[in-house]
Structure formats: structure tokens, C-alpha cells
Image 1 (cartoon, rainbow, N blue to C red):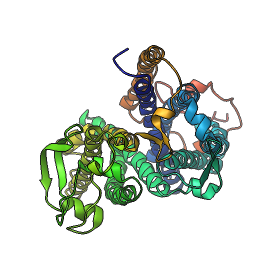
Image 2: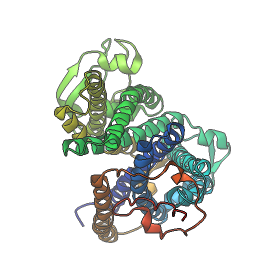
Image 3: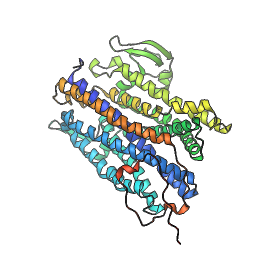
Image 4: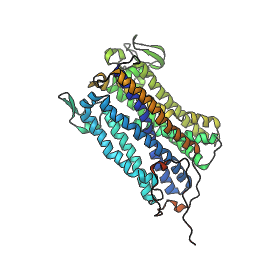
Length: 476
């Protein structure tokens, strides 16, 4: 069906489900840390604006967290259903790493999430703040184990192949494989960027709608500071990650650059735009800057690196897709940097909350962090092809023996169900954002435990509106 093979359908199905899933954990990582900062600032400064923002974003966090958990469960099953030969071959490495994620990060998050969401007036402020920090730490630990597993697939080491199966012989080398530090840093910072853009777009949207409150101003201000600080850092991390990729996956870099062959004695240009033609082995319509590719990747004006034609055709990733997905990611990264500097200039001119062109640009950039994450993930995973474990196991040898009809049917079902379930979840989350943070007038003792009441039902963590907590009864 669709004129695609079972392998291609299995890849599309996994790519579709991961594309949905990766969005929610990224926002969860960023929002969890943001909530910890908000609560810490409230405890320190006793400024009610931080408390109001915490209540507002905790509801959105709850919905996003739930969608991340649900979408992740589907992926776990796909390893057994669609990629059973990969699970049989490399399960001794990937299985324990995913188990460590559950035993450490998921248990930590699950243990403290209830206190964080439902314990604001049930426990003391110190314990509640500790719970928020533990949830934030849990999201980072979860990312660490997941990226350790995926990075091992990109740059495998610390293993031996015995009787046709991977056997770990050095867990430190398995976990701390060559690409792991760069990919962990790159993904974590990307999550913070995506969250800052989401928060900043929310604040800018409310200001454009004339919902000008101290809480709205504060969240826009914090988001723009975060963007200004983190966007340049991400560019530096991306550069280091690119050098690491050149050392261990040169075919991926050649595809990213649209670079086919070296000219003796000449530097490699940086191709800004073009169309890599896989059949003709040339990048058509190339707009390039002479020698800049050499300078970026070799730190020399005349340095060279392998072109894609130096690799057998069967070992080449799809340069057309990787070339453009990388440019989408990088282009959005520089637009984020532009937004950060523009906001800083507007702040200096006392126009941060008044400049409508800036606010419109911030709203437009709201989804750019998520789009950049997806583009970066496509670059990484499609650039690894035709290997599922780079240099060790090919993707065609990892797929289960399913018919194209079965995979086509399940793919259609996935698309329909995901659009319904997660479309509804995202719509509800955006409705919560549209309501904006509410202004409360509780006494400062509000955070202290009252010793009364009982936990609310789970879904009350994300109500349609944030109701003020009831005041303590007055004594007659």
C-alpha cells in the first residue's frame, strides 16, 4: 500500500510516533525547571506574581506531562512489534538503559508529582519546593538515560558481539559514548529554548490582546532573558556537536553540507541553499560562500573533509532531506537569537511591552523551538541511515517480518488516533494558555498546610480556570 515497502512504512510509523512524543518531554523538561525557578523566586521575594505564574503554568505542565507519558508508551511497544530483530540484537544494551530511566527518573517524577500538583496547601512551602525541584531533576535524569541509549546507537562503544548479539562489556563506555555529552547538552538546551519561546509567545499574545498585567509582563520578560542567554549557548554547543559528528559520522556531515567531492588544493565552500541530487551526485542551484565550510568544520580555510561520493551508495544517508532539515534548524536558531537581541534592545528603550512588531514576532516564534527540535531530530536520525546502530547493524536487518498491508493499516490508525487524542490535548492546553494567569488575593500564609481537605481528583490538576484557594475561616 502507498507504493512503500514494509521497511519504509515501519520507519515512517516510528518517525510519526516519535515526532509527536519528542515535543511533550521537551516542553516538560523546560516547564519543570521554569516552575522550580518561579517557586524559588516566590519563596525568596514573597512576590505574589511568581506564585500566580506558578499556579498558571503548573496546570499546563500537568496536561503536557500526561500527553508525554501516553505517547511514550506507544514507542516502547513498537520496539517489540516493528523492530523485534533490533530488540533481539541490541536489547542487552538498550533494555537496561531504558530500565534505568524508569527506576530513577520516572519513579522520582511519579513520587513527587502528586505533591507538586496537589500539595500546595497540604504540605509546607519547603517540602513543596523540594517536590518541584525533584520533578525538575527527574525530567533531566530521564533525558540523560534516553539520550545515552540513542547516542550509543549513533556512536556505539563498550560492547562486544557474541553469538550474533550485542553484549555490554563496559557500561561506562556504553553510557558515556563519544556523542553523548554533546547530544545531551544540545537537547537539554533545545528544551529550554522551546519552553522560553512558548512562554514568551504566551505573554506577547496576551499583551497584544490588551491583557496587560504584572504576571503577563513578568513571564514575557523572563522568557526573553532566557532566550538572550541560551540562544548563543546553543549555537556554540551545536558547533561542537558538528565537529564531533564529523569525527564519528563523516557521511552525515557530508550530507548535511551537500558536499560531494573535494577539489585538490581548494577549501570546501559553505552551501547556504541548494538541492542535493542523489542520483546525479551533485548539489544543484547551490548558493555558496567559498572556503567557509572548511573554516567551520576544520578551522582552516583550505582544510578538507570527506565528500559524499567517497562513501558507497548503500552507505549514504538521504542528503536531500538531511540538507534541508539541518537548515531549518539552524535558520530558526538564528531567528531565536535575533528575537533575543531585539527584545534586549526594546527593553533598553523601555519598549519591551509596547512594541507591537516585536510582540507579533514573539508570537510567530512561539512554535519555532518545537519545529527546530523536530528538524534536528530528523537530521540526526535520517543522517544515521542506513544504520540503526551506526556501523554495526543496518536498519533493513532490524525490522520485523510484517507485511506492507499490516504496517499501512496500523499507520493509518496511528495517524487518526493521534490527531484525535493529542489534537484534543493540545487544543485544551492552548485554551488554558489563552485564559492567562489569574490574579489572586490570598494571604501570604496561603502556602502553609491547613491540615484539612482531601486530594482532588487527578484531572483537577488542569481545570478550566484557576480558582482562588478558600480563605481560612474567621474566628468569631
